[in-house]
Length: 236
Image (cartoon, rainbow, N blue to C red; front, side, top):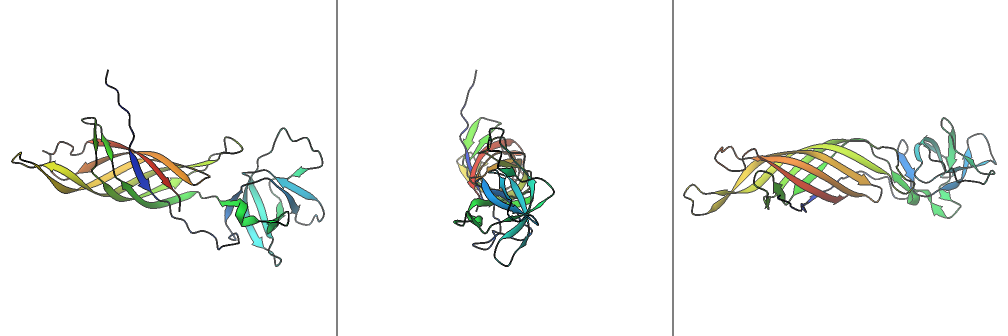
């Protein structure tokens, strides 16, 4: 029985437009990086509310004192919470999120932008595992990918992730045997690929893609044959 270990690294970058330093974007969606206990419901001065880590909120507006009016779109609670004095935020209500948590921590420092919908970026594949002959190839590909990002519910309090099915197209430099049989030469191939990308909240990305290279020559042994590549990258 033939066995093999697949260790192929691809590099990709997901480029986003971050909020201005020190503030959250109006209309932006974020997740809390820590549990916050000093929120106030709009119109209910004096009552403090808590929002658990990873709770997802939408920024409605910004107040003159720098605080934010927010609405929570995804809420996490703890069944182990025994302090009856703590009231948790609820759906459908607006809350005041302080610009500084407990008058110390800037809110932008504990909030991560929550990105869903269309996404795109450059994709570099330096190595490929070719399925037709079980070989590891250094035929590098430079291309561009596009996909749709989904954000499932956090599966644990300390781990949330996004998943992006994607398609990619680009160009590769491939090694092709010369007709004389005396050596090889480099040719440019058109490459397409499809796969998925998983991003966790430390901004590390991992994924797997399947692709094919075509140089327009049916005699090339890898013409239209599939390859796999394992991807590791970081969001910028």
